[in-house]
Image (cartoon, helix red, strand yellow):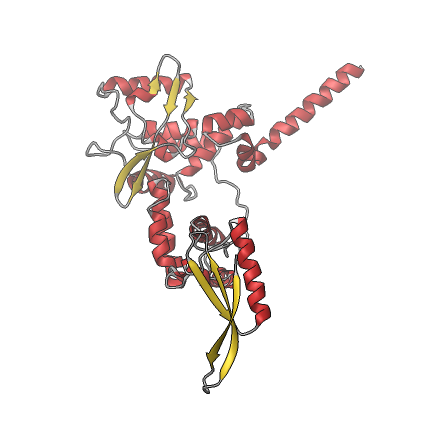
Length: 365
């Protein structure tokens, strides 16, 4: 229960004036007080405090005085994300968030401050996707501050940001993808063939071990992913944290069988390694193998991920359903598959329309 008492305090000219002090106990039974010049203001504050305490919404006014840089350092030690994701968060904090908000108290950050920060990055020419990444990090660490009862609400909620423009995934038709793979230097041609046919992510492919190849069931067991963080290799789960079995075509199965016959028999050995026997670095795969081959063939300089999109296009042209593509590619849902590759199913819809037309004419003949 909050109590209001009348107190006297001196003004700067030495005169006495009445003031109104609200005294109350917080949920931890610690006595707090706040003084107001007007009785009506004290009454409003007392009513608000009582309501917040009863509802469990009370926030200690001193809690929000924590500086954002101190809270961010603590928050980073509590999050459970992949090392590569954490490194990206640290990069966003270091380059974009801490220089602006690091010295600010959490309770002093306003929605308008964050909106101005977004506008500034946009004026600077930062891409919409990069701005979104930075906002996500700030929003998450402020969400955690709300959960820890440091602030009452998150000022990063409902922030307007530049729209990320739709960009159709770059991919090659099967013939071009096969041509690229055929020109990749050995002994990594098989690695790129796996990427082009199965749609595995680079990190999933270079994490494959001998035991992941099931010759009897003609499956690749995709259960790990390899990431490079600050020059170090880190094995972890796949992007969706799910294990999946990817079917192998007879031709690809034969190549894998031949590859295994030449390799060591340790089931935990990596299928593809670097020159010194360790994991294959993405930089080598991208610069020395992939880009060099694209340049040689006069093809657009796109990322290795284009082979994943090319694999999806190959599956769709072969008649695979969205659900089948989702299962093989390891997407979190068939809806996501349609969001990314829906335009590739257009030809299937045209073919369906022609079949329906033929069926209708046959039935009415």
